[in-house]
Length: 283
Image (cartoon, rainbow, N blue to C red):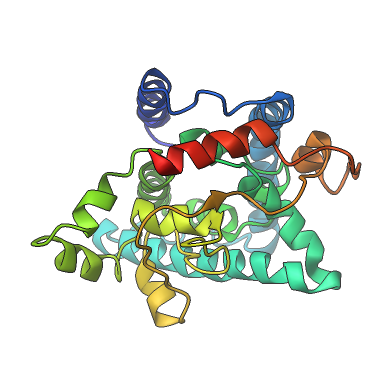
């Protein structure tokens, strides 16, 4: 990823601000800490492997196309690649949630479930993904294939855009609440939310209960896709609770499913984190 050090620095800055301002206090029990640490290790290990796989498949299927689009103008390649990536991710993300209702496709939901099982939302959740998610998410395949075809700069800009937007929408700082409810700026901001994903829109996707809508708001940056396909929900405030109702699976299953399938039926659903998230809603 181009200029990855700046992206990681931005993540660190927001993370430190959240911690200093007490937004992480009381959130991490043993289970949550193990899931987070496991996902960090898995990401560092599996994402390079998925990149190697994608490069191998691209070379196998398109042996004569390496660098074929290298001369394409960035002004054309970037917006086309960005919209294509967003469009494909929207549908894959939507199907991952809808797969929960279909026993034969439930594996797809379980690969994505890890990102939603946290009983809170902050920038740390951006790394809370199953070890094998990068092998199935279309973003990896589109960006990898585009790079193989010679669109490396456009692919890099697309990744940077998505990454930075993820930081904004996952961060615990909900500056958009005040703007949305503002007498003067509120209507214009709500109109803008029909085009771009705000923190409130994505927080809603991670919640349940009042203003929680896990089966809505699937886009990463372009909420116009949700609006177009009837899945947009613009909230009035924060969701009643974050996460998934009921107990979470064993931490190892969350990180390594389908290789690990261990049910810890007696474990309560992140009780400490759930209490803390409820307190934050009231603050």
